[in-house]
Amino acid sequence: MGTLTKQIYRYTHPRSMRHNENLWPYIKIQRDKFGAISELFYKNSQVPLQNLSALKGSYNGRVLLIATGPSIKKLDFSSIPKLPTVGVNGAWNLHKKVDFNIYIIVDMTFIDNRPEILEQIIAKPDLTLFTTVHGIIKIIDRFLLNNIKCKLIVIEDKCYKIYEKKISADDITKTFTSHQDILSLEKSDRIAFNHDIRTGIFDAGTVVYWSLQILAFLGFNTIYIAGLDMNNFSKPRFYETTDNMLPSFLNEKLHDIIIPAFTLASQALRNKNIEVINLSQDSAIPSYIFPKLDYRDAFK
Image (tube, rainbow, N blue to C red; front, side, top):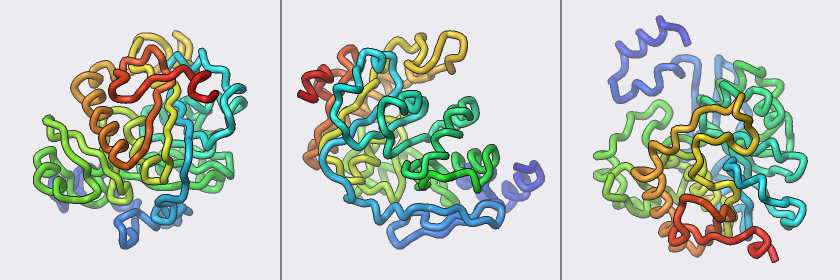
């Protein structure tokens, strides 16, 4: 976005609104009565959105969430029954083996560096893509609005909502502990789990944490996760080679943020009678958080 508009924004808005400086004045939004973004305009053109509120509890039963750890290569997808299937980031490389119904992308670096994958994802009319306003902007700028055939749903980081003040870790403790949509907080005061994603999603350094909040909101009862390895970070993801692999920063967050967040998520989901099963046998996420099963046993 233009440097001049950034300067104007900074002079006319408090520092707590700085995360919006690349959006103003190009983005206009409307929210529904639950807090979800229901209308989005970019440079005066309306971006068609699906109604997030209408999707609350619209699914049930089992769902397969595919992440991108190298263990994916050990799975025979032809032996897995047909389930609603959710992909994140480069999981799309399996699209000839599985039919993705839902896709979730919140990593802007992925959008910048894997346009060939994004181009295929947005061309699928029966796929629903959950992404942020920043993600939608990047997709429109690169591919043009007319070329987006998939269904779009806007999701937001709870602490950095569009045109609202940033929420600090201290503010989370003061503001949200009494809200029914927040289960609890870890000692770090940086981690929470939101059962109603219309008011935002809590980040914990990995798209899988966003995905768990989304899938719980949608109503699924059992979540199978493939490719949740969280180790061997120096190795390529299942769809990469050593020549084209993007850097991973998960190792820096694993013990301080990711494992505590997944611990919280397991408690939150169990309280809602939602089961999570990790299909990665060698995952660094302990089995006391998400039980591990060989995929052949999981889908007998």
